[in-house]
Length: 223
Image (cartoon, rainbow, N blue to C red; front, side):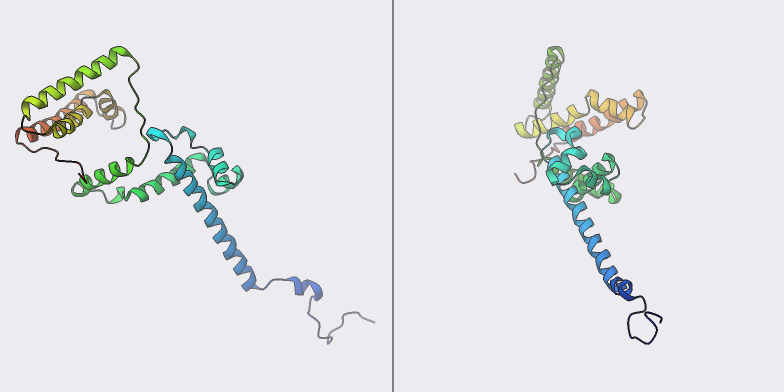
């Protein structure tokens, strides 16, 4: 007697065949898992972005996988499942910040550069900025003397301007009279010191010409 012979009407593979999922069911489960994974990734990025909004002066040392995992309520392994390295996570956060700021570097032109700067600075104003006083008294004194000198120069050259307009112009000039600007031109842009000097003095000359022509920076947006 042969058990399970043909013609009995049972499934070809018995119980095993009954347990097998249909392609439609498998497709649904795969789709559901994909949605859940996407939602988890989105939550991780949103949590990391919220954390960045609390960090003063764009100091990202505390933006770690561990910190993000704790705040998001997931294991660190879950974060690494979506971002192979901490750098990958930070890159995703930076792209999210650019999206929030409305900045599209790929479409940057000289015509929209001013608008891009305005959008960037407006967005940066939403982050905490801690004052970082110069600790060395010698350099602190030098910084104060420089600012006094710039204010005096603007008072003489732009006597008809408001104090606010002169202060804004002095701040712009100071930005190109700083060690940080010089070092960035030399290290990041690979300019030799002579070319870095020429670039900075060129911009300063444009600002000085605008002052002589009476073309001030105007009032801040929204004033």
